Amino acid sequence: MGPSGSSRGSLPRAQLWFFSTALVITALDQVVKRVVVHAMQMGQSIDVVGSVVRLTRTSNTGGAFGLLRGRGNWFIVVSFVAALAIAALAKQIARGRRIERLAFSLILGGAAGNLIDRIRLGAVIDFIDVGGSGYRWPAFNVADSAITIGVTLLAISLVFFGGAAGGREAEPDVGDGQE
View: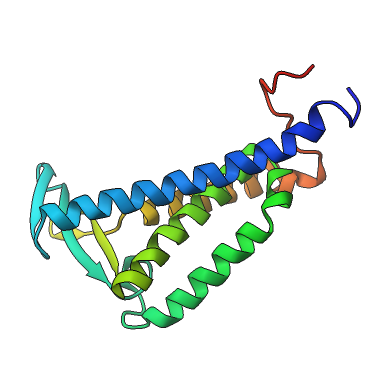
């Protein structure tokens, strides 16, 4: 079908899906963090899978994994600029592969979730605590997980699919009701 059919309706649908996914990630992150804050004291740990996976309420004024602690204002600016850039590129992202749309929506949602914490609290609430045998991974949260998964999906797209739609047209949306 030509440009007047499914392609015209699929771009706004892809953008809606993109922003909806980012919003769901942001909301999920904030809801889970509020539950943790109300249910746990700072530093409290609850074993989930033995001592390998715990919920441990912590606070992080730095970046991922506690890097650059105390530079909260810098992270506010970087997160805000990154979120704005991704949102501004939403139309181009929506034209890309599904894997790239998902990746950028996860990154946007995660960045927004942590940005809300930084603005509201001056630090990010972390609570997922994994490790064993004397080594524990730095605590993280839903937003951090979304960002990490998003970056991983972008790397997969780049390595295996040539990234940025590899110069090809975007995938057609399945089930858009137009033939």
